[in-house]
Length: 138
Image (cartoon, helix red, strand yellow):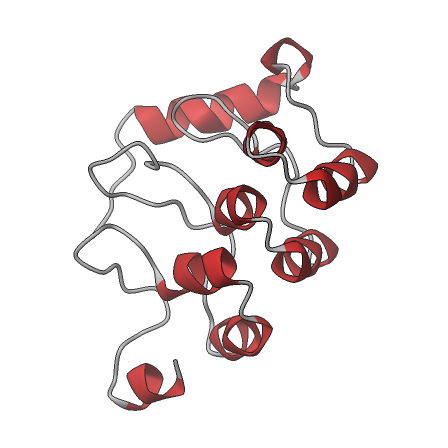
């Protein structure tokens, strides 16, 4: 991670798959990489923008799906919204439960995470709609 930053790769640059470095460290539960990227200015809410099923996933979605408990906690303690939705209108709690990530599911629940979208607040639905309606990605 440090080598990429030293070569001039910016923390909010997307790769050829639509991922940011922060998505990769969240998926791998890489706490050191996470801290370096956040210190370098990485956007902890930036969505995935590739051409696959993970479009709209935030680092929180990646961490929940992978069972990356340490990154999940760092994101939530840092103020990332627990009920952020991807383009399929699924929250991180949905992915944690669908993968059997019990520890992550409990943490998300304690932070107010919901899985049923009928219980999600309207402001989260508006944010998902904003992403669907033409958010500009590099």
